[in-house]
Length: 172
Image (tube, rainbow, N blue to C red; front, side, top):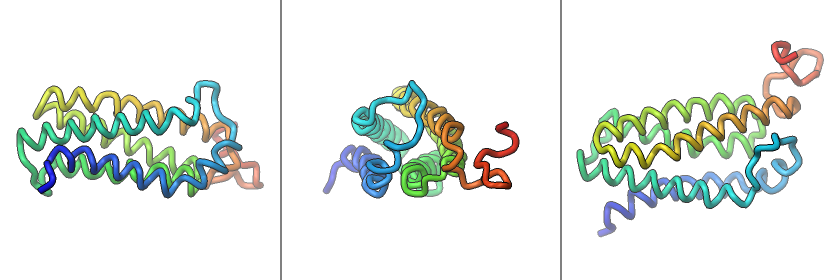
């Protein structure tokens, strides 16, 4: 039988790996060509950062599992699952869909659910909650970066200003 810690760490790592594999064509071709803010991390930094955060998330979930067990109907585990699903969807929305406004709305929802999951984890196990803090911080940073990309690249928006100008009227 596979140890619960292996499953707990393996699930977020597998989710991240799947999302990045699906997104690889856009990461390699589209993303290098769009305008980015000066505070964008170098591309090689993303893989190690996400992997580290997924391991910490997995360890946090294992600590919570040891404390309260698992029930699919538990609000704690539902929130954890929802944030994992939103995490899995964000990369493909951004890099495959290439619609920065849709990805921005999604990553803001991810930030809310990840924050809720972290708070719920922290209520069960203080260390588990603290292990989630860097992940929530990185999601907040990713949301800010996504917002900056949206602002700098109006041609990559789903909703465009009438007349083909790209930017919504409120942005002018």
